[in-house]
Length: 389
Image (tube, rainbow, N blue to C red):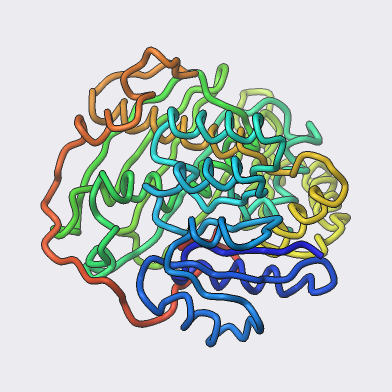
């Protein structure tokens, strides 16, 4: 039976608690920590976690509890320090997105994992979704041929009050805006489908949130071989219509699932009816998908539990979390410096270092309000969306 701790009693911790509770024969939540007085105790009561202990200091929890696994669900600026401390203390770690605000911090976390021999997993729960898994299977099948273009719409909407929460809306505490904290899910899925691009260019804007330093909108162009991808990261899109569209040599596929395939007339124009045989084959591939036993956070946490039991690497490791941060960092560098950025980024690049982005990033506006808590639940997306916190 794994003894589990949770650090951070905010809204996204509920997804972790529910996930652990789905495996009662394999794990037990024994402690929850939060620096806000009484918040951990309140979370224990509302979540019916049983005999767990509440702490107001996560390091006291580390010292007093014999933990096997900890979920870190705190603001991004604290991820690196907490992760390295718990790994060095002999505890396996799953850390919420984004893994950390800088590549330097990500690499320190990975180094601590290697030195400890423990497991490190960065949250990318949307890989554990049937609709996304079908898209991955279709890309990997080769049926659509070489990739010409991707369109990734990470379209969210947040009102002004969203950035009133104390840690949101500043480069120092949040690490960035919608590109880092919302589109990170779609960025991870882009990397899962395609790998790291060779070049990035981008523009950043704050279109609607005068109470935040950070961007609420960015548009990036990524180069993949002969093809391109365009990524929109946003918290200003009404309707939150999110989509990943993959245009291949032979067909187009997307999430939400849709297929189209053209055939050429002798003059190069599309033939009537298209390639119905290929459309049928791709739809058959989708229909043959075996549903995952668990979705989202429950799927990823279930994999982490199994990885500890089986002494193997998790499906999503620290390197995956780092890769997503690397692409976000390249987007920020491209937008701030107004240049085309080559990937991968190297340790001698100033944007690799912790703190450099904070120095260079524009303050679109200044944060005007800071509240410790906000009422209401966190919306983590509908079935056709990737989930956010």
